[in-house]
Amino acid sequence: MARRIKKPAIKPEQRLDWLRRYEDGESPPKIAENDQVDVRTVRKHIELAKQEKEVKEARSMVLRTALEHHYQDLCDYAKKLGGQPSEEVSVFTPYSEHIRIALHQHLPRSPIWGYLNQKDGLQQRITQLTEEAGKKIEEGVRSDSRLSTKLTDSEPGPIYGVIDALKFQVEQWVRGYRGLNIEDNLVTEPSEEGFVNLRYGAFQLGKVEKSRVGPVREVIREVLQGWESRIKQFHEYQQLEKSFLELRRVEKNLSDEIAVITLRRVVPGRCRYCPL
Image (cartoon, rainbow, N blue to C red; front, side, top):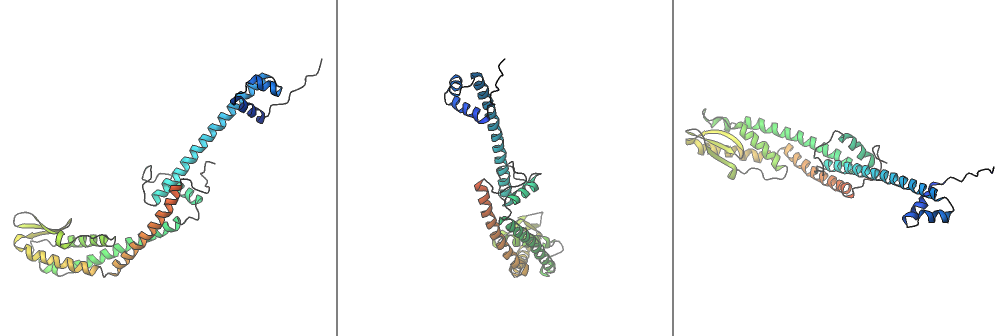
């Protein structure tokens, strides 16, 4: 009995070549004839090559989708760091800290980290200076004798309203807004019989006897004008103005850097959460 010769195994490159030729229009019998192999072997390995190709394409698609989502997570988080709404939810997710770590690993030398530190420091300083200016206003207005000596017992003092209005003015001015205007925003409104309400913008300054509206309004006007002028000389106010100017500069720089990240849509570098 003649010894059976074992045919060499079909290599992956061979069956890929057969698949390519088959897809180009060459029939399995023709491939078998040209390559001198059994047509059943050709058909078997063409089918195997199809399956391998489908698996590879499916894996590639899954990987591409995962990578796209990964980049989108990074870009969305970068937008939030810059104070811009993302295309997704505008609040930070439970994985925000993980995404921050990922973004830092991708871009460890990016200027955004320095700008974020500067922004945090400036915001803390602004909060502190605002509190200090508010305390100074409160102490000064409370000790202003005009508000205690020129009003009657039936006219509750407008101290709290004046304090709140002046604090509001500081917050508006240091941000570059106009704030309230005494000529337009110091108004009276009807109240209970014999009284009117005095209001400065949204801030209530208390009830005033109708017969005394003129004098009381003039006292309030003097107090507001005096303190609005004095506040702008406060050291705290001047430092607030400088801090807001610096904050706007830092935010502009941060926004420019984040625009580069988000508009590229592909974040260079790698992190522990990369799908690859």
